[in-house]
Image 1 (cartoon, rainbow, N blue to C red):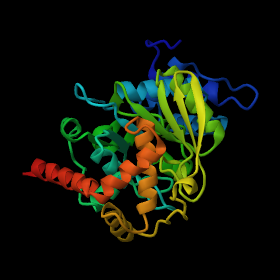
Image 2 (image 1 turned 45 degrees about the vertical axis):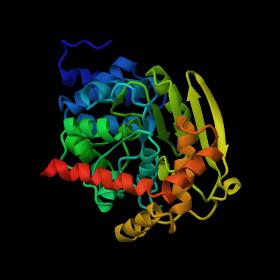
Image 3 (image 1 turned 180 degrees about the horizontal axis):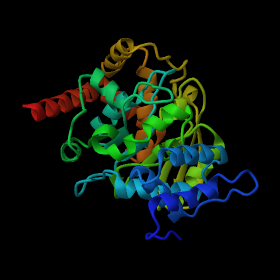
Length: 355
């Protein structure tokens, strides 16, 4: 139990002693303690020296599930939140690394547009380029497609979500408290535990399907338990490209569907559905933009990956009854121009906000 009458600095010392006492004496924090520790960090009640020590000690020991749940509690109470309008389908909420992509061409912006064209709402969250990868992020990719989502108020994001079923929560605009952690990422040179939290958090409150990326199997199982404690009972975990939610087409896709406390492993094979080829490498923003726009016109090097991802997520979300049907639905959204028209509608909405 934490004592709210104790100063933040002193409370944080107690949390630091638990995580930083060495391999044999270090103890896990309770959910409440972890929530308090992160709140003290965000509120800058802990000193920079304390915060740096805590983040690196916690990384070395690795956060326990109840600690991640406590940190998630803090993000839920201190961060922004969105709600679905009455009668809207549950959105797909994608949890991807905030430090972006550097090795493979992102597919998710195209996937999102296909999903939206198929009446499947989508919620994303992310920030600007940040350590340690300084990779390309969602806000930059959508801007490259002619949809600049920087500088919107949270009310405007909610309005766009109500009208078009799409929301991108941008950390610098909508969660400035969390921006304070970026300098620590740079100075430590390692991802802090909050990087795992970013894969599990969504600003959407209410019924949704959360999609969380992972790299290593222990990370996935910790996420399952942490999210179960947090009452996230409808979940997909994905061993995606660069730890994100883009499904690869160059190898089998390792995923899992979690409903309640039961997890079902799903291995998807793009080769079985005519989608297998090497995953496209990231080169530069101009090349990616040309390829993404080509895919929206039903051609180009990203087309197979876009069809595979959108088809799989239409199936996961229940918009199609089988993976084969989902792939067909994705193909129709591209061939008909519906996905490209969705981009044009979002561009018009954004332009109207600037008038």
